[in-house]
Image (spheres, helix red, strand yellow):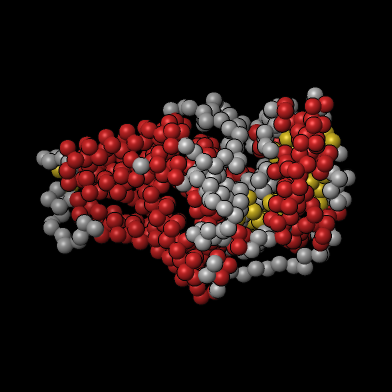
Length: 587
């Protein structure tokens, strides 16, 4: 704990020092001859946005400097505690979800530790046709090895509290039968060895309340999806390693691919329903961060290990689905503004809440900084503070510094991967380097569009518009140009108006506005282009990942099961017609 506290202070001090330095340089550049009110506003915005930018990069650099150490026990050693593997589903494809459960079950059976794990499908499905299919495919699922008596299903008629309420209902009704609960998403997939290791770590430390893995994205099919998949597999573990060093025993919980101690969770993580109407009232959407904070408050350890392999999930394959998910996360994170001051929370939990809030507020603040910079070029504005003398500092100093803060961590990860041989798993040093450059280019092109989408999400929440919890549409790939236009025409209009205003009213600002607005003009093209599925079955070198080039055993098993079940689907699903009201509890 002392080490994590020291690292926090070091990172916070470094981020604060660099932010103050940047603000001073910015004010020296803009305040020559007199500091206007707009100059002070812009400097404040530089401080607010710059600090969090530097903070994120500090975690990556710390991760680069820290070697990855995998600590894993004997895979065939059965844990002492009983674990319920919870799979919450909400209007999901039963074949895809249940094939993942079957693959994980087979992996546990092969290791000889399956008797210590039960699977529990917690359905909140509201579409009756889908619910009927769940029952039919569940009957197929319990025919899996050791399935009878170990794989369970129940469906709630009303999804009160959404996913958090679904899990809370299980803990209240059945949690006493288990020591631990491994919480998954419908698209989660884990190696049996990983599941066993997580349970053994809970056995080994009675104070460990929650243990979080870092899942890698798999099965991406589009340019957009594969860029996210590469970032999750190649870049994210290093960022997470640096963050874990600072977090210590007050780590994160991301809502899935994590194991909890049922007794601790039941005693500590009862979530309140916030007063008032959504989006700031009602059920807490981003419940995972709150539950981690509550466990820490109660004295339980919350840890994360980015080095533990065999944890997977799927991600959105196009920008529209990504934005839908991001809209929910935005509302959930902004809800945390009401919880930052909750009694008894540890400082780090409050800081993480603030960090999550700023992750979304940063987008409209960046746009406000852009607009303020255009206004600042309007002549004859009165000074409110005595100005600085002429400086030799170049106007390009800050843009170059921002680019360095964004790019250096990713390049440092690539260099570190050369030294430790990690690039071999990603197609070699040149292929990995090309993918890093490709990710930088693509994320730069898409950044303005994401900036507008996140800004709209923030504005909607602040205006009291509830985004709800729409069901995830998995496997939806290509977005036509017409659909992309309907989703982003307003971005094109704002970008065009901003560029025109810069040229007509403050021509000197055009050179600073263009890098952000020109890609935004191409938003429909970029959305459609990046959503096209890859052609053929061969793995492209660009954004190739270790899970593509050498899939783990559970990935290959799940694909084989999915293929076989898809072929059997028509005959099996014919039974769904006879299922009128799905049984609530099947064992």
